[in-house]
Amino acid sequence: MFDMKEILDAVASGQLKPEDAAGRIRTLLRESGSFAEMGHTKLDLQRRARRGVAEAVYCAGKTPMQALEIAARLDADGQNVLCTRVSAEMAVHMLASRPDFIYNAVARIIYKRNEAMGAPRGLILVLTAGTSDIPVAEEAALSAEMMGDRVERVFDVGVAGIHRLFGAAGELMRQARVIIVAAGMEGALPSVVAGLVGVPVIATPTSAGYGASFGGVTALLAMLTSCSGGVAVVNIDNGFGAALLAHLINQPAQDNSPEQD
Image (cartoon, rainbow, N blue to C red; front, side, top):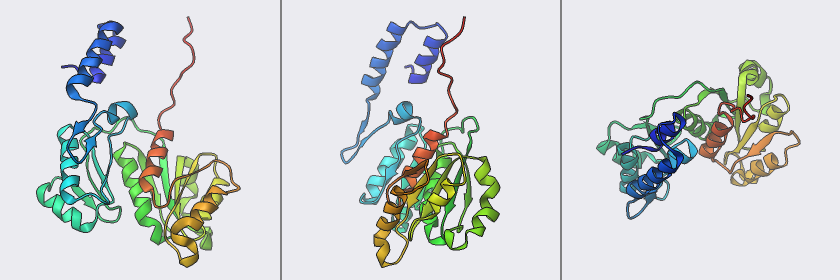
C-alpha cells in the first residue's frame, strides 16, 4: 500500500490523478487508522505526516509500562522516539527492556533516532541564565536536535555577569536564526538578548529561584512583560515546547509567490 509521501510524489510527477490520490488517501487513513488504540493511549501516528515531527511522549504521570509501550509502538512505526520527563527510576525500567533506547539524565529524555536528518537548517542557539536552568535548556536542545535542527548551547551567561554573554555567545547570537533563552530568578536574560539580535527569541521561564520567584511565576510574568520586541514565551520549565516553536521558525523559507510564465 502507498504511504502518504508516495501518493503526493505520484501526483506531483503526473503519474496519479488528484481524484485517484484522494481515494488512496482515504484508504490509507482507513486501513492505517489516524491513531493507534492502545487502551491507555490513543497514539497519534499521523502527526509526523501532518506537522513534520512525530508525537513526543510526556512521561510524567504515566507508568513505566505505559511509557514503554508507547515508545515501542512509535519505534515499530519507524518514527523517532522522544520521551520527555522520564525519571531515573522509569529510565531503568524502560532501558532494561529496550537497551537500544538512550537516556539523557540531565534532560530527562529517552530517545531513539529512526529518521534520517533532513537538509541542514539555520542555527538554534540555546542559552541559560544559570547552571540551574540547564535541565530545561537541555530538554529544549535535545528535542530540537531530534527534530532535525542544528543546535548550539551556551550555559550560565545571566545578567549577574552580563559580560559572559558577549564573550561566550556573541558570535553565535549573530549566526542564529532563533534563540531559546532559559532563565529562572527574575527572568531578565531574554529581554537583554532580544534587545541585541534581529531574530525571534523564545523565552523559557524555569522554576529555579528562591521563594519570591514562586516556582517560576516571577520569571514567566517578567518575560510576558518584556519591553524588548520579538519575544515569545512558553510555559514554566517547558523546554520541549520551546524546541518545537524554534523548530517551526527554523524551517527553510518557502517561495509562495505565483509562478511566472
